Image (cartoon, rainbow, N blue to C red; front, side, top):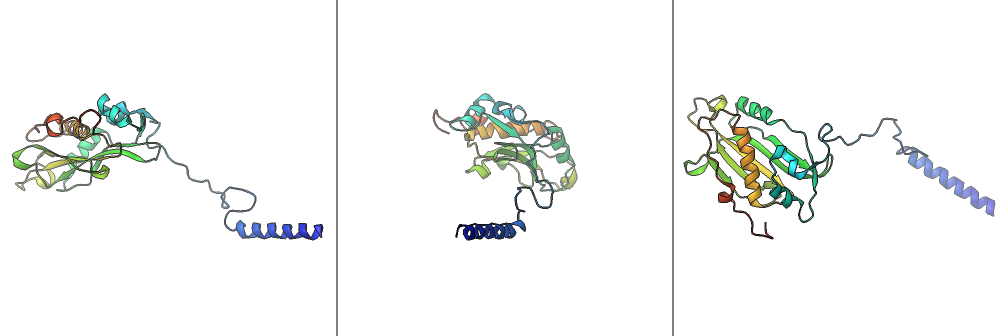
Length: 222
């Protein structure tokens, strides 16, 4: 009786192995084809973790970094690889379309190839700031559309040349830190200043004080 029971277990094991071998192979965890499994690539070559205050090329001041860390945010982040400010400005200067594909200025994740924490982009747009202003900040709601800054910058080239229309840059932000709207304004205005300083705008944009367009939050509030 014991012998028959052992034989039955042996047959069951053999049957299970035969059923699984076509999928995973029997007795080993490696891919049956022998090809190596893909590994997650770092978002930047050797950048690794950096303190939040050093993120985005110094755009974060200590006040914004403190907001990002509280109450449960990370103290360090991974900056994903993006073009340099000079490269972005050059690409925008050569862009001939009235509405261009957004250029990434800064992207932060919680780990290599991990969850996005914040992203800032810029693109040409046919829209202009209202009321004759050269810069217009818009408060938005939700992490996917955390803030927008429209900056008039007619470089007099590409698709706008001879059109009689102004060109504007639209800076946009996604924010899963959920920092205050005041911080959104500071980050977008600082980003815009970096880019427009490298473009030959016919008229220099007049940037507002972030405190005016988005007052600092009261203590304990965002």
